[in-house]
Image 1 (cartoon, rainbow over the protein chains, first blue to last red):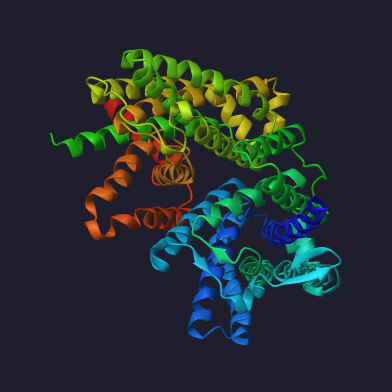
Image 2: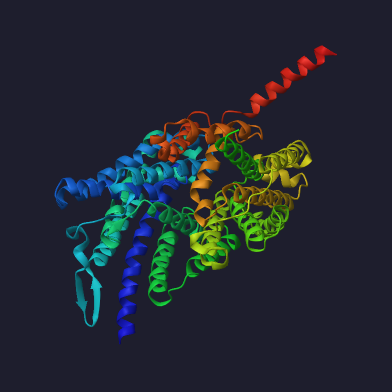
Length: 294
Length: 286
């Protein structure tokens, strides 16, 4: 049945895209936990990482052994570099202003991408990274290899992250700061160091997301940051700020909804309708569908 | 006066209006993006009325005010109940929605935009008269009980409501009024530019406005009068090769201000000190 095959393939594809959204949401939730900041620029850091990773791929002649770690290192460096910018505001607990700061970082990164890379055109990632549209067969259904990689990679990333957050000493420190900043400081948890570690972990996630985007979407453009950022922000609100599991679930759902809408209901109004529905839900339930905090 | 200078004056006027529109809800602690969405609505209304219907610019402006206030009122009802990040982000969604809607409406040009908007006679004068009138309104609101109520709402909402203020209706009023000013700014923007597209009312506009607001000083209404001319001047004064880097400069300035002097150039303390000096001089003269 043609419809059925297509449906499953779109489902997988949607889950793969959704998992990239999920990781971005998790990264932003982590930054929210550790510093109370809404890092609007995080999605743009991901895009910038993708661009720089593309440069590395070009320089090393598509050497995956160098490039993949490079993505992760770049993501971490970029994210940690923004940490000192947020620190004064975070100390004063000026949360609205952190969003504006994030917007400032966002515009700088977007403009740098459109000015200095590929003359502002979209960039394409090499086949060796994307799996080149290779397909695996499962019965009568064909899956894209890239999507499988993406899904598997995200699952691993999430599991590792949860392990770090809940079992390691640093993870506990981060969660303590999230729960009550002042008490955490009184207990001697180092503000600066824990923050940098939190940003570092988010940075690693950014690098992973950049790889996933290269694998699933096979391209990147300067405008991608805007699209990712608004989706991540509305997802966070929809699910509930700081709610890791809720955010991930909603992200996956969004990915699937997008894939389905694209394949089965092409129309010019779907984007507006989806945003409208999401906005209404947020207004009705400001604490999110799943509530704040995991 | 060269055309470029005239356009500069017009743009500064439009942005001062828009900035005050964002400033008012911010006094109440809300970062509300409704003015931007109403700016798009006001611009398209004014453009449609003057170009498609052929009515005079004044009617276009009036219609923009009507549609802007209406379009601003209904979201305000919902957003008055939300706070902080939720308001900021969900109202961001409004901007995206209106952009998507505009792109789909072919009778106002859709994705291609609307060009050939008739010019308004004596545009700079009319615009700045509106700026002065709006400034008076904003000043009066700031100094009145409403302004103090907004300040209370920003500092400690729980305490404010125990003092008997109806925070909800206060928010609705301020947000609707802000949206109205935004729509007026949009109408004048349409008259100034002559061409409008959905993209004009998106993130770049949001960022430029936030930059001007935060650099000028977001806790007083006077800061924008300094930051808008300066920041609009940047594209004029820098050498042409660097002109496309304007956004990066804005972003960098915003980041620097937020890290080094978050209150902005014109802070509340500065105004208070100026007031004290002014009163001292005034008293001595008597």
